Each structure stands twice: as C-alpha cells, then as structure tokens.
Image 1 (cartoon, helix red, strand yellow):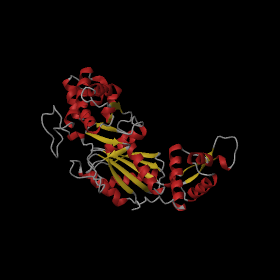
Image 2 (cartoon, one colour):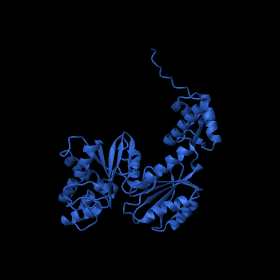
Image 3 (cartoon, helix red, strand yellow):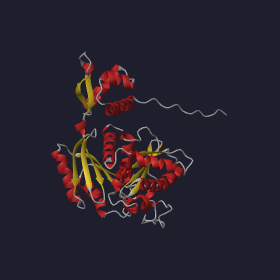
Image 4 (tube, helix red, strand yellow):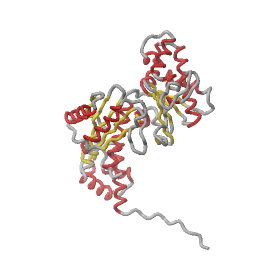
Length: 380
C-alpha cells in the first residue's frame, strides 16, 4: 500500500501575498518610525517594484503618507519618508479604579492628545466628559476604547463579571460607552494591562515569561508565559489575593480574600505592619524605606511567600513587583524579596521592581487600544 502523501502547502495567491506584504510594511513603520522606500525594501526583502506598488496601495488607502525626507544628501523619490497616518483613527484608554476614572485620548500611533479625569459613579456624564475631551483635542469619532478595571473579565463574553464586590457603576460605565459610542469597547483586567506595559515598555522587555505582582490597594498578578498573556479558563489567572498563606489567621472564601495573600500585602496590611514597627506615615513612604530595615525585612518575608507559590507552580523565571507599592519599594525591596525567595524554592527566579508604577494600567490600555485598532485597519 502506497503511503499517503502530506499535501504541500498551496502558494499564496497574489492578493494574499499583497496583504501579507502590506501588513509587514505597516508593522515596520509602527515599530521603526518613518522609513524610505529603500529602507522598506531592505527590511522586507521585497523587490523595488513590489515596494513601489505597496507604497502606492497603502497611500491610496489612507494608511501611510509622506512625512518628510531622509537626511541623505541625494534628494528625489527615494528620499521620501513614509509614515503611518496617525489621524486615521482616534482611540481612548480608561483606567477605572474604585474611586477614580482617568482617560487618555490618542491617535492611531498611541500618541496622547488629551488626558482627563472622568466623573465617578456617573456613567452618562463620564461618557460626555470623554467626548468633550476628544473634541477639545481635535479628535474625530473614537474607533477603539480600552477600559482597564479591577475584577474578573469573562474571556468568553468580554464582560466585567458582577460577583467581585466592585461598584455596580463599573459595569454601567462600560454599558454606557457601548451604548453611546460607535467605537469597539474592550474591557481588560487592570493588572493584565499593567503587564502588557511592563512587557513592551518596562523591566520585562527582555523576557518571554514573567509574573507581574501588583501591589496597591488590592493585590493581583498577571501571568505571561512564552510571550503570551494567560487569562485562565474563567479569566481568573493571577487572582493571587485569594491564595491561602500562613499568618493570616483564617482562610479566604469565594467572596472574601481576607484570609488570603491580600491580607498580608494589601495596602491596609502594609500600613498595619508599618505601624507595628512604629511608623505612622503613608504606605508608599514605609515601603520606600522610611519605616526602617526591620519593616522591609518583614514585608519581604511576606512577599516571598506569594512569590514562592508563583515560582513553584508556574516557574516563570521572574517576578516583577509592580503597582504603587512595588515602585515605591524599588530595587531595594526587590533584592530583599529575591534573597528570601531563594531560600524557599529551588527554581531560579529573578525579582525585579517596576519603573512604571501606577500609570502602567493606562499605558497598557493605550497599547491595547492601538493594537486592536491597527488589527482592524491594517487588515489583520
């Protein structure tokens, strides 16, 4: 019997090849900035006629334009610099907390055009304020809006789940945005967005795998393995605040993380620990070193417990201490956690401190909005 042959892949049709080449060129222009046709030829490996056709197509589609000339002495068609038309679409990124909402309006390249605080607990007024900020910045209709919020986002529906104890107006705000705007409105967990920002802009740029540990009013984690954000079956990957740990005096429940890791390293727990060490100031000041070495050692001990659990289960190779408290602790706190962690697990795990801090959520939302819009407009 003659063994069956595996069919060879069919060659791409001319239209498919053009679409692939266009996408590659747009990606290069996004990552490297304006390029000449000669530079596009070099970076894509395409022939000069193919690049000329590509430039003509993308210009006619309103996706790229001439933005200047290169610094080369010889002028002419080959010296023209082509760049993405940033005004082709306008986007918005929202950072929704329990007591505040911050919005940034950007162009298609993610450059900020306006930043504003939106009314809390008043969804319709918040949408109006966002539209006003966009108009004042000269932006057109919003194409994509990304909302970063605490809590679980259902991966099947993209909806913010209502059983996480968060204010109801969070979900009402998302509904108002979808009802009032022609934009594509995407909801993402705030810690996941912070991890995206850390991966593209922060201390995790050289890593394929890491876990971001968010330390602030709440405690969360984001899991990035092999370059991909992992959300879990129900969107709950990284809900480390519910992790049972020694020293909390109880166990967490389905609706209360009071007996979990949150009870050791959330803001209120950090404040209580600082007061136990005689420091009456703010949590950020304590974590930055003002509460003294014994306090930092005790806090590092607590953080190492959660980091050890992460390392043992996921083996990410690196834990990033993020959020306002992670940034306040900086390399000094990271070094203490790393030292203690090395005694708790045989798996080599770096501990790094963020340089992005609290704005990371908004930065991640901007990146996510830019990528989502470009996926649509660039024919992904």
